[in-house]
Amino acid sequence: MKTSIFTVILFLFASSLFASPKDDKKKEVPGAAGIVEGVVYSLPETGIRVKVKATRERFVHGPFQGYAQKMLGIDNAPVSDADRWTIDGLTLETFSQPDADQVRKALGQVAQLVSLTDAGILAGINTGAKSPESAIQTQSFIVKEPESRVNFTDLSIWSFYSSADTTKRFKMVSKNPDQKAAEAAETIFNLRNSRFALLTNANNEPLPDGKSFEIMRDELSKMEENYLALFIGKSSKQSYEFSFDYIPNEKSAKGEVFFRFSDERGALPKTDLSGRPIVIDINRNDELAAKQSSLSSSANPEAGKSGVFYRIPGMAEIRILDGNKQLAAARTPIAQFGTVAPVPEELLDGSYKLEFYPTTGAIKSIVDSKTTELK
Image (cartoon, rainbow, N blue to C red; front, side, top):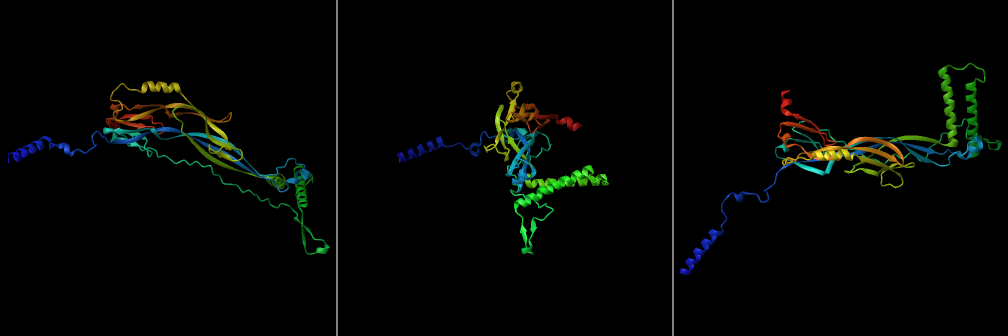
């Protein structure tokens, strides 16, 4: 009996010793300590977009090219079809996108004051200004294929068929290529004689009025060109536009292949080695970047506490080169060529309105909100 009482007393003592106190700690959520909510945003990085205007000339050889030298005295008439591309011009533009290396979180009171673009780039603090929406830019390397075969119209003033002889009274005999070519060549010389007679008034007849004279002269020239095309071929031109994007890193770039260009196939992506390389040179202003970096740091231990930062963009010189030939050049600010600095904490208490350039991340304006309300 004594042993059992002693056992019960020992059990009650041990239970009281290891029992958990009933306090508010039971209400805490596991893992919740230290979590601070905020608004995630990005600082921008600058991209370079080149828009290329090019012309495609499609040449088709003439059906009578083999007779050009013999009947018209024209040497080296083209014997095959070909495409020829030329670059007419380039324009440089900049655009922005979120920088994956500069994704941050605004904390505390300022988190409810931030304004973002549709891409999540910081646009303003304590301002209701609407930020511009970004547009989709499509890169296209597909062009409409021209017809591989061009039909040449029968322009002869005589039929391409000769009359049947008396033994074949009601039949027509097709002319061979030699006869057709000779017929077209004779028409060319007749047109030249007619135009010469018109211009020199060889028949000593009253000439038509000025406008009628011009129309007659032009029509004779067009007819001759159409007949000549049967021997030397003809061409057509089409214009196209392409765009190419490039995102520089934080350093200068030299000789980076931007896209490729072929005289036979036109503008091509840089992975297509059938074209010659079009390269981009980007020279960063290192002296400016060094001075920006030296002044952007803050001695205030509270700097950056709210998690709001802005960019001080650097400057760059850009050149687009086709071998040794310079196609385009420009100077422009590049966000990632500069430095990142914290917005002073005293500007984030809701008393000021801050607006940023979404393309570079630089501060556009700082306005005392109380001053604007008085106005």
